[in-house]
Length: 344
Ligand code: KG4
Ligand code: ZN
Image 1 (tube, rainbow, N blue to C red):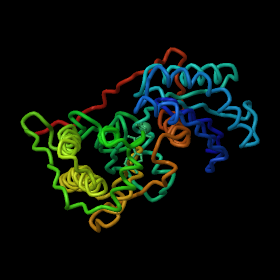
Image 2: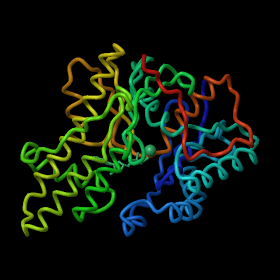
Image 3: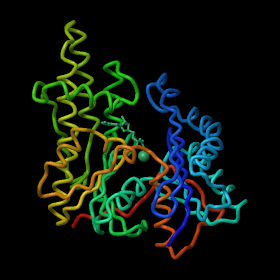
């Protein structure tokens, strides 16, 4: 059905807004806070929420100007209410609910993780349920079985037991004196190095405690950081590109092996990867080379946090919920508990 949807994303350090008009995005604004957080070497939650307060109204105004639309033209407001930084979520949620309420328009609260994955159905009209969805970002590394738009249609197959993959990239980069966010810098350096020059370990998870598709990144992070300390002690440090290549190989290999195992066990060959790490060049290359998997890649603009995924997923969810918008009492949640697949 034809609709104009305003999508608002403020769960972390991007104040992102998009407007979906029918099947086309007519506005896309991302007010990134990256530069403000660089001094801390990561996202400072208190700073993020204050910046969202400053950015939200102007970002939404800019989106309407870009779309050449007025607020009254909107049919639905979609916004992220979970998971994320509490203060950041509150700013977007409060703005979105007020905006919709004042205009007497319906609104939907959206799960950020599912939006990262389900936006692939906007890009690839031939992507069918069920498929494997992986969120690989600064806060999450989660494998899901996606059977539909609603949370009840989604099962968590596995997740990181400790650090998220993007967090691991960021911490390694910080230890080596690279800028935040570390992912793009490491990716760039790794391309120039030899991945076999350093052999960083794969985790040995005790599957009695960890699920079949769980992952772990803290051991790899420590191994790569310890390498830095060893170089410092020895006064020798000229192989940055090789270390980054070795690290990237180990980090991506773990993710890909887990995806392969899940795809095989569940007999599903369609795979979507969303979140900032989905922009990684080595991960994309490896996934495209896998002839037994059908990899539905996202454009780089839809990998990191963006307003489009919230607008699109919000619209689909609204219809999946029989056009039941949310009520003003719906809150924000820093964490989510999706149904976890039980091992047999
Ligand atoms: O999805 P996102 O924008 O925000 C979160 O919800 O976390 O993901 C940000 C993460 C950061 O950890 C960043 O270092 C990582 O994505 N990232 C990358 C690349 N581009 C961004 N990691 C690896 N390779 C990249 N090219
Ligand atoms: Zn995200």
